[in-house]
Length: 575
Image (cartoon, rainbow, N blue to C red; front, top):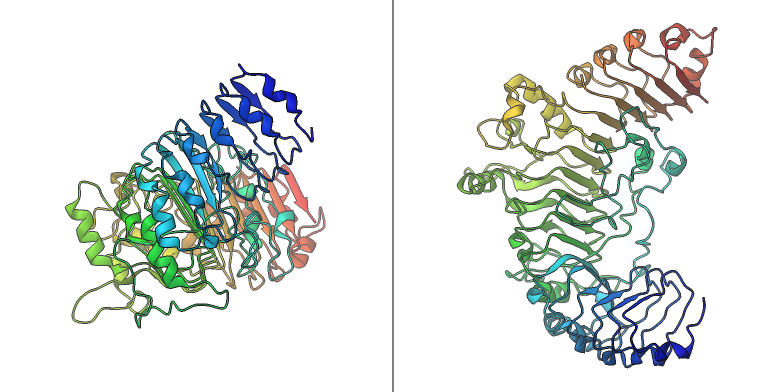
C-alpha cells in the first residue's frame, strides 16, 4: 500500500493500527483524529518521510513503532506532548535542528529501546542534548546514539562488518565456515538477546548462537587488515570530568571532516542516561575520550562502541559488574581501553564485592589498528612501564573469569590485555597480535591461573587454559602453528584455518584434538601437507580444503600422498 485513505480518520474508536512494511510516504492528516489510538506500528515503512504535523492530537498514543523507517527526515513538533508514550524506538534529528531534541524532554515513561540518529547535526549540542533529559528516563532498556548520518565519513553503518574482501582477494562473504554437529550454523552470531530481556539483536556484532558461537557463520575469517565495517551501530559520549581538548595529550582539534571534537566532548555529558540502562550503543562520536558517566552505568549488560575515529581511550569499565557483552570496533585512534594502570584497576576490584569483569561473557575487539593495550601502564613503580615493554607482566595480569567468546581481529599492536583461559563458545583470532593467546596458554605453567588477582573462576584452577574451547578460527601470518597451542584443546569441535599465506605445515599436536568434528582450511596457498596425526582424529566428520593448491593435490582421492590420512572422514569437500 502506497497511500492511506483520508477516511482512516473516521475510525474514531480504533485503538490499534498496524501499517508495517507498506510503501507509504506520508500519512494523511486525518489520522490525527484517532484520539483513542494507543498503538501505531510503522515498522519497516522504509519510504515514510514524515509523521503527521499535529501528532499531539493523538492523546492516547502509547506505542509508536518506527523501527527501520530509514527515510524519516525529522520528528514533528508536538511529539513531546504525548507524555503517555512508552514506545518510541527511533528519533530523527533533522539537519540544522536547534530544538528537535526538546521533544524528548517530557517523555519520561519511554520503555524498551530508542535509537537517536544524526546527533552530529545538532546545533548548540551541549544545551540541546541536556534538554533531551535522558537521565530521567529510568524505564529505558536500551539507548543507541548515532552521531553521523550514514555515509558522512564514508562508512555505511548498515553494511555487515563481515562482508568485506581480504587482502588476499578472498571474498569473506563467500567463505563461510560450515557448522559441526552440535554447533548451529544457522544462528546469527550477531544476536545479543539476554535472559534479562535486553534485546540487542540490532547489534550485528554479537557472536552468540544456540551453543554460543557458530564457527560456520564467521565470514570475516579471511578479512583484510582493515576489513571490518563496524556496521549497524552507534556513536556517543562524554563525561563528568570534561576533557580539555586543547590539552597536549589530546590532539582534538577540528578535523578534516569539520567536526570539532572539543564540542563533542563538552556536549556528551548532557547525554547521560539513567543508571538503570541495560544496553548502550555509540557510533560516530568524534571526541578524544568517552564520557566518564559510562563507568557508572552499573546495570549495563551490553556495550557497543563503533567508528569513533578520534577516540583514544575509554573510561574505566571494570566497574560494570553486570556487563556481559562488550564490542569495540573501527576505532582508528584508540590506543588503550583505559588510561589507567593495571594495578590500580585490580586493587579497586579487590576492594569491591565483585571480581574483575565478573559477568563478561563476550568480547569483540575488531579493527582497532592502533590499540596497544588494555591499560596505559601495567606497573606504577617509580616509572610506569608501558604495556608493551615488559616481559614479566603476564605473571600478574588478571583474567576474565567468565569470558566464553572472544573475537580479536585486525588489532596488530595489542600486546597487553586480560587473559581468557575459560573460553568455551569460541575464539576468533584474525590478523591480530598473538601475545594474549600465548600468555593465556602459558597460564598452564603457572598453576592454571594468573598470579594472586581474584579474576579467575574456581573452575580455572582445575581446568587447563582453553580446555573447554569448542570453536577456534585462526587467520595469521605465521609459517607454522606452535605445537603447544593444541595440547589443551580437548573439547574443540570446530577448527578453521584460513587466510594464512605463509603457513607451510600444520603441527602434529593436532592429534590432541580428539573432539574435533569439523576442520576448514582455506587460502593457505603454501600449505604442503597434513600432519600424520590426522588419521587419529576419529571424531572428525567433515574436512573442507579450499584454495590450497598444493594440499589439494596431495589429498586427491586414492592417488594423493595424504589420502590415507583423510580417507576415514565421511564428508570431504576439496575445491
